Amino acid sequence: MELHDKVAVITGAGSGIGRSLASAFADEGARAVVCTDLDGDNAAETAAMVNESHPGVATSAALDVGDERAVERVVVDTTEAHGSLDVFVSNAGYGLRGGLDLPTDEWQRMMNVHTWSHLYAARAVIPGMVERGGGYLLNTASAAGLLTQMDSGPYAVSKHAAVAFAEWVAINHGDDGIGVSVLCPQAVRTNILGPRALDKPSNAEARQAAGDGILEPDDVARDCVDAIREERFLVLPHPEVSTYFERKANDYDRWLRGMRRFRQRLVGA
Image 1 (cartoon, rainbow, N blue to C red):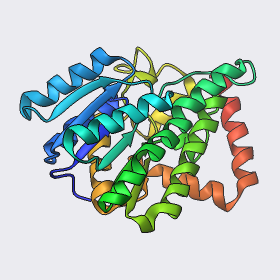
Image 2: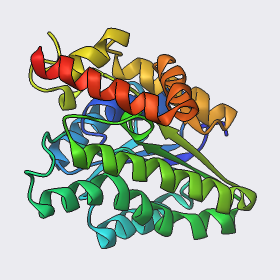
Image 3: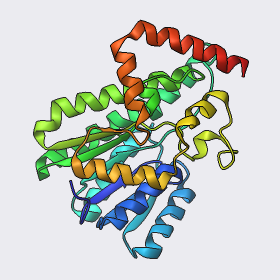
Image 4: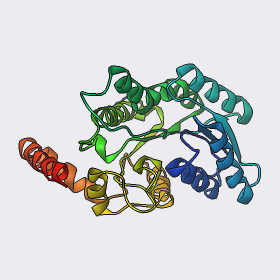
């Protein structure tokens, strides 16, 4: 899909990858880019930034992606305002360290933001997209969705589920004209890396992932635009992730043993 003259909604657009995607979509000639974020002020800031170089293209709205009715309202409002909705980017996310020690509601909250939000978006947009002849979903997951995230159980689980849901949509709705890409980066210079992201990641595992390079959000956004144009499912800004994923699939037990050794090194770091 080419983004020229398309209407897009981007969640988590108040900063990081979402903000860079809003700018990249406008550069590609999108007719309208709706920037949404839990922090409405940040979303408005992104829209204003985009409109500096592309006047009138961007608007903004506050959105809690864990609220299905709120997602539906954004979809309806966008469609009514612009006559279509061609691309939905389900990008919002956050980090939280912990595992069995975390209360269940923290696991549930992360599932809401990282998994169920993709379901809410798909439910809201796919029927209209099919009726209009097709559309595109770009879902942000993580390399953790293909591998793991040792310092965060709910992050690893929710991102795996996000990848699985994107696969399911691609299989069941690809023939309806719905394109799907799922973004699975390692370290990107965003708020998730913590307040010292401009210097170095804030935990041992992120520092190790950064050995493959901390990418800039603008570079990741360009990879996403290319994937949408090529209608490619996996977006892997860190090409090493493909190799790691192959090793995991080829010998799961060996991979698990290696990850346990890796964890021991990190704990001792």
